[in-house]
Image 1 (tube, rainbow, N blue to C red):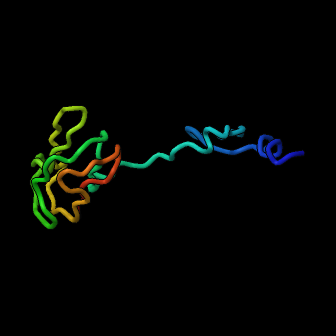
Image 2: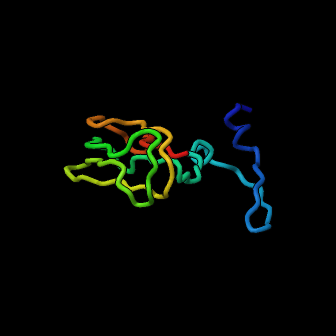
Image 3: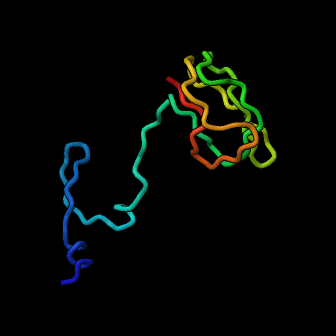
Length: 109
């Protein structure tokens, strides 16, 4: 028996709502991107684009809904606001820099 067939014949156990199941998991499911819980202390790019301007600096105190930076994408300028009041730990980007989707922009303490 090849390893591929052997892997296909192995069952995986899991529980949903208190019920226990045994099933075969597909390669697509096994290789999927794992769920990552949202961390409000990390501000990430929601779309690829270019950083036009950064309004804050490291160690600045900011208030909730204060503008942090402008991200231009598809000829639209998007102002990224602080999701919470706090202190800036590190700014990972600078004006003129191109960013990818989900790239870390700003980190809070």
